[in-house]
Length: 382
Ligand SMILES: Nc1ncnc2c1ncn2[C@@H]1O[C@H](COP(=O)(O)OP(=O)(O)OP(=O)(O)O)[C@@H](O)[C@H]1O
Ligand SMILES: [Mg+2]
Image 1 (spheres, rainbow, N blue to C red):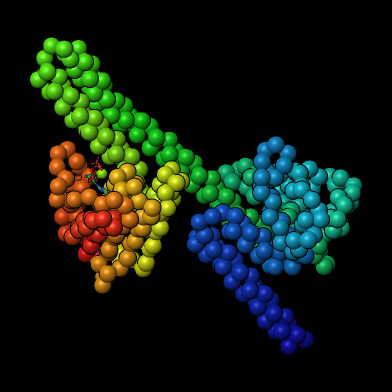
Image 2 (cartoon, rainbow, N blue to C red):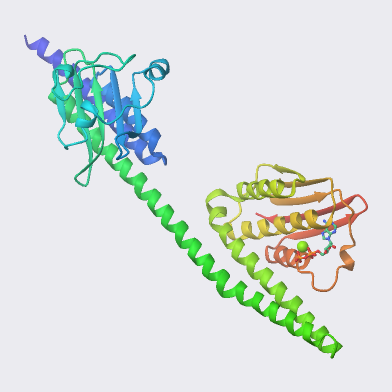
């Protein structure tokens, strides 16, 4: 009957439509997710829904007879818990990892590769569709679907193969990403080691030499000793600055990626742990800063915090990063012994460089200190 065929066509179009939409959702999710596991989990759910299977799973073997990742869909947490540890790559699960060909059967238990029994608490399964996940000719995992009323069709197989191809891309991307991250860490480490060797070691060598010659001159020539000691001080300062520059160089990358507030929070965390000092950090809604100025603000915060920790003998240090009518306001306050900022002379670089950085930023730096403690306040136009 013509009407019947039309109705069937409509329902067929509707199913295809749903399938395409679901597929496109999955593909879009691939692009927007940075982590691979949520993407794969979504793929497994979609595979189950689109094929009409009761259970679905995706396994990535670890190369040692087990799965490094085994995600399921259609199984409750209780069921998963009752089944115990992750499956191993044997039986039908393993068979799908041996060749890139998909496999479809009405009754998995009749397959010669089936081990002959289900583990305790494992649901009994009959119909089965296994599709290997293949990347560059190599099987890197598989999608498993079971328990569909009426069994799996050739259409189901095509659809799942498409999802498997996307899973391959997601897994490969994640692996490449991990490798490039490892490589850049190694490169950065090498570069820093080189820098430390070239600059800081040389300067410290100079410090040692100057100290030695000062001690041999000790009884003979007071003026020469004083000159050598001044040199020791100068070289040591140079080495410290160099070291700080190298250490700081680690920061801009993470500043760019994580933002000022996060990097400052991490820094405060480290200081708390190292010093055991109480440090409160308060971060409000911040105006946006480019990474150059953000680095300067971070360095000022670090110097002010360092001073409070080293010199103030404070009970309590409070750091705040806030929005002051569109300007970024940093304050570092301590309740320590205070000092006279106008009287600081000689070779002290910390306060000087804080002021220099503030000027470079087009901002204002104020250091107020007295018997109640010290407050360093920086205002920067956003
Ligand atoms: N929060 C503070 N509480 C008490 N004294 C402080 C505080 N900040 C700075 N001072 C005093 O001011 C001096 C100068 O500070 P500055 O940061 O310029 O030098 P520094 O910390 O001694 O050395 P560096 O320049 O290597 O950091 C310090 O030596 C200290 O005596
Ligand atoms: Mg200082």
